[in-house]
Image (cartoon, rainbow, N blue to C red; front, side, top):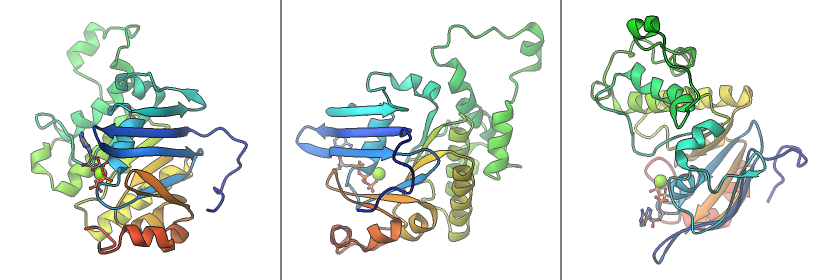
Length: 267
Ligand SMILES: Nc1ncnc2c1ncn2[C@@H]1O[C@H](COP(=O)(O)OP(=O)(O)OP(=O)(O)O)[C@@H](O)[C@H]1O
Ligand SMILES: [Mg+2]
């Protein structure tokens, strides 16, 4: 296994120690330890059912963990409720699109911006009569997220009016509007064509260059090679390899895990 391309002395943004999530007899995640250093894009690959989404669920506290430790910036957050993760500035997108169907694109993205301040924030000031008359303000974070995900022109559309690929971009925009320090993305390019995928890869790399730490789950091996600085491979809930992307993809244990399955989007 190769060393991570960063100084070992800095504190990881995220650290998992011996994390396990068991559903009855199913060991969906079974003793995973990892460190994500600041400002890098990490990837997770692995065949269907290997535990990738469950791992993201445990990191975001939506899925109850069976054992292990979660640290953000070196401090345990294993008991922080999911509603307060936005305060830690951990944002995620879901494998299945989760947009609110009755809200337009702008309002869906605004939810991301609002989640940093509204979730159990009892100290926030109330809007003035002028602000109430004017209606809800669009935050600069929302405008910026729309620009970065190239959703300009789609602001008034409702999710049902958008292609699947565009809906996924709205999910990414909503997560960005939270101004995250750690962004977790579960198959953000599923349903996208090659050029849309390349665009998302470029966006994630731009965000990385601005210092955002990311953990990306994707089946598209080429996308992972083009995008990630460091890759973890999972199989049956466990890490079977980690390191530089090309090295992990060539690893015999990883090849074996995918044996009989197609490498790529439909793996
Ligand atoms: N809520 C649940 N209850 C019971 N079993 C579950 C639950 N969620 C996931 N599993 C099981 O845990 C294992 C890991 O599932 P998970 O969705 O994390 O895999 P994945 O790597 O994300 O797969 P995919 O690539 O298909 O998205 C699977 O065997 C799955 O059936
Ligand atoms: Mg999954």
